[in-house]
Length: 593
Ligand SMILES: Cc1cc2nc3c(=O)[nH]c(=O)nc-3n(C[C@H](O)[C@H](O)[C@H](O)COP(=O)(O)OP(=O)(O)OC[C@H]3O[C@@H](n4cnc5c(N)ncnc54)[C@H](O)[C@@H]3O)c2cc1C
Image (cartoon, rainbow, N blue to C red; front, side, top):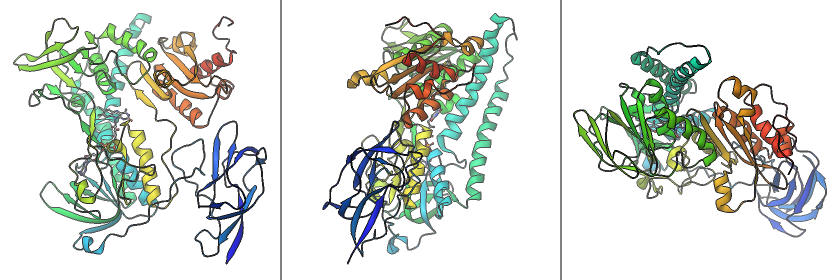
């Protein structure tokens, strides 16, 4: 027996009376659940409305050009009475990844719950709905979200302290030390404006203790949040025994077997190493070593002009080290547009001992008085002695060494675990998130992916479909960018126009003595819709968030340029750039074209 059901426009957020621009089915068509029925478009977004049920289209109730809102009748669908979708369900709302297409984006069906095979689970010490391997920002977020959604969760971490790289030896301690650097350099540079504090008295032990305290508060907070949610934390190194059992080896040799319905791999990444360097010499540091702040070297060599290397260079420079940076590429922070890097490069060229581009370290030899670097490239002298060397040439994913093969989980040659939009690996009940599942290796990517994985496991219909993942170098000045870069646009032949607002015209930038920045917007030439943005200047990392939201909301130059921003703030700079795009700026004079 068949039923006829009315298919209506589901909850589409704030959109009302928006245009139907395509009707994708006709009477007589057989549709599956999730088949797109119509496409609607507002001035902000285009979205497809999927069918909430399988069946045959009996009659269409609208046409191209009609206006629809939530509840507008789209069509009549004849459904098999015994089909699972007899009563059409509204699409589930919690689309974690912010998307201009809204919550009704078609996504593939959630994984069927795979029950732990009884035989494999025999003898297990613990059983969990969800096992999370690794407690970084990806892992703890996934564990907490899954617990909040009613799952019994075990979180495995090899170290006593939760929080992973980000909390312990990454984002947080580096930003604590960068704040120290900012205090020192701001005070130092303000002498020129009439307030001289004199040479700072640096107590490196106290700085270290302060940074350690910032970290400890974070890791203890995470442990407390785990306890409140009754997430069972198991300490030790976890590896798969099979597709349904992880075994955890504690430092004392004891092992715990945990049977699971679902697993989320969140093992993160480790420091990448170059071959042939003297790693047993403590004067050769990685980022973790540099964050320990053992001393302030007289001369520091930073190998790698990427974000992590330059952030640590900024810290040691402020503390008084003479810093040299060597980078293989022809510019610093290769992923960012060159105009954004220029003010940073200019400042550090003045402050640092040297910045060598198109150059590399061919040899590093331990000597009693320091590490002797032999350079290749335009470097003079070719051999130089440094008190310490920081190697910051990237990170590699921790996909290998967790017994993934015993669970049947594919790991690529570089150690990444490929996933789909729901963060599922090739084994449907095993998920991967964060650094281990792909670039960019950033904490905010890990946490968003974590929520998608946990919500998918809980049966929500979600996908990771963020339009952009912003990047920030917390250097001095900061550099931040999101969406399309000019370099990418040129490479891919994407048409764009740009408006670049110089901070020299910002009253706030001038009043804090940092007018070297700029804020650049890239937009579509016709619609003037935002495509991407880049900011260089103090607090660029805070300012970029507005533009990420603007991109996700499909904002155009008028949306940004007609939004009243408080004066005088650096937050006005995207607004001024948008006014430049609109031709209405009065804070600058732009000659008529
Ligand atoms: C110096 C530095 C500064 C950074 N600054 C920033 C920043 O400002 N902003 C930003 O977004 N990102 C920053 N990052 C990157 C950021 O730290 C990572 O992207 C983020 O930590 C990744 O999170 P994750 O959960 O994927 O993995 P991780 O944080 O790497 O956590 C993985 C966890 O898994 C554990 N683990 C691994 N294998 C096992 C196993 N077999 N058994 C048990 N436990 C295991 C590890 O011990 C670790 O605790 C920085 C990184 C560094 C090194």
